[in-house]
Length: 426
Image (tube, rainbow, N blue to C red; front, side, top):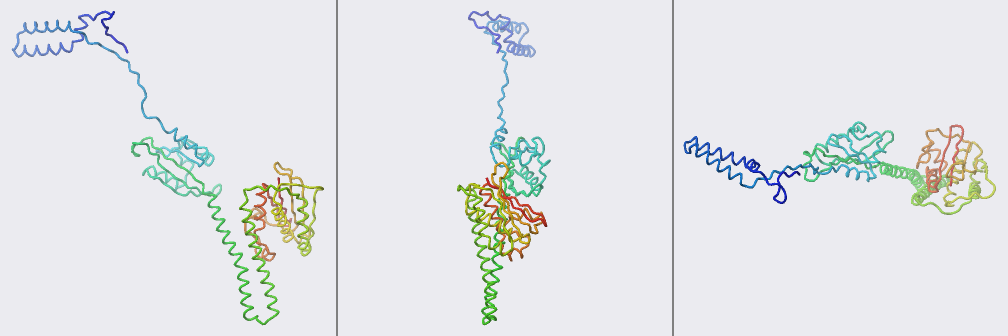
């Protein structure tokens, strides 16, 4: 600020000319009034000139008006940009989140969204990458109506996924949605893939379990009706039917036992076992328990075990069930190979210490079946499996037990070359 006036304390006085200049506006007004009076013949020219001179003298004696020139520096005082705070909030979310402007251009994508949609680039319209019609319609509807839109996004490529998508307008306080040029849309994605898969698995499991139980149950009811009716006095038929009925009852009992075993394993899936197991001794025990089945199938179980103990951390009963299932399957389905080989050796892989391999020389399976062999109730040949008293749950149980032990299950097979199952344990 620059001050052009001076106070009487120690500073020069304002000159008469300066005081007259400071009252120029007032003198101009008075001069105009005097001229008007002269023109209207109400005042003579000499008198008007004398009156103006007197007023000018009085004005020269009056204190002058200070003239101040101030330099104003503009200061930004508008509302702060809150987009950065919304972006910081989006970054704190574990679910994918996108911030869009009113033209559906991506302003910000959090880390989860970047991982899920690596081609989404801030500054580009979201439709450049995400072209799902439901998503485009939801974004357009939320932008036009200012209301939250929710829908389920189902993608099949590169893998099948489901997401709950919420498109919500971000409203600023005291601002109408359609009048806000800086309005934003928040798009969040909540994964439903695991829920969908678990739900499908539960539905399939109930359907398969019901079917597996219904078949032997229907056979039992049919045989019971026959024994109560036409074969009530036929001793030979009664003996034959009772043997079949016992087999069907054993099948149902085995199925229920496997279902209960699978349920117990899944219940403790997250708890790692703590016991110490000698795998070599355990494999010898399993072979002894299966010698009767092997002799009946005319199969020899050949074991290759290291000298001394080979210890690992695990649940003894569950690992016994793993190797019993694998060797029993090899005896059942690879019997025409006449030999089942069981070998224990160092794993030779980071994170694993022991490798147990069970190999048969049977017919093997087609490569497309191999990834599905550990699915519940999956059978390549259902009739053959049932005749061999298989429940379709053996390899599913093996897989869950191995995972509980933080191990790995690897199945290799080719038609005509038999099958090899590797169990890697820490």
